Image (tube, rainbow, N blue to C red):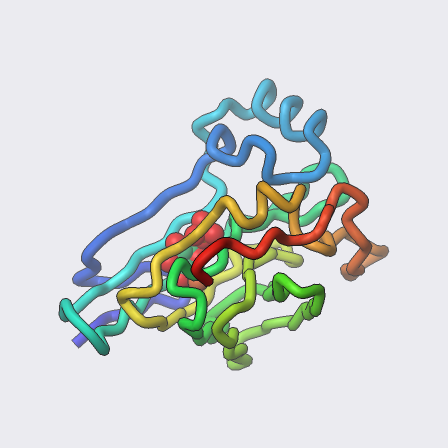
Length: 193
Ligand SMILES: O=P(O)(O)OC[C@H]1O[C@H](O)[C@H](O)[C@@H](O)[C@@H]1O
Ligand SMILES: [Fe+2]
């Protein structure tokens, strides 16, 4: 039995994974805003955290977890996770929103793009082969429950090599808007994928 909290966290987790402001170098488009935030709040400020539960090893095993992205903005851009494609890139992942308000930002390496808003009770099935990241567009923690194949792994380089994802999620009045990332230079398809 797993106790899954709406504010994030799993009782009986296998692992907690935390990312702090200092770990987010090069992730946000506005590098000056990131530097100013580090100077103001310190590199240790918590940005997002993940609890996961791995109940089994071997083929077919799942990882179930919660992801909690704290609210905020870096310049115009909303708080987000680093994002990745699965190392075994055909592995899919389900995200179900437990609390807060966010967007699942997704790209394929051949140029398709999608942004799906998540509020409590809504879910998104991220198919295999899609780069994905969570973005918090609200003013409270954005919490999702996720589930994916335990052998999937994460490749982070795909986004940094591309100069970021294709679009960025920015504040627009009371809401959000998707704007093209001028630094994005297209994804390089990795050998063997
Ligand atoms: O892996 P990041 O982009 O840093 O995001 C953090 C987490 O996001 C998702 O929820 C994944 O399922 C986690 O396995 C991952 O570690
Ligand atoms: Fe993933």
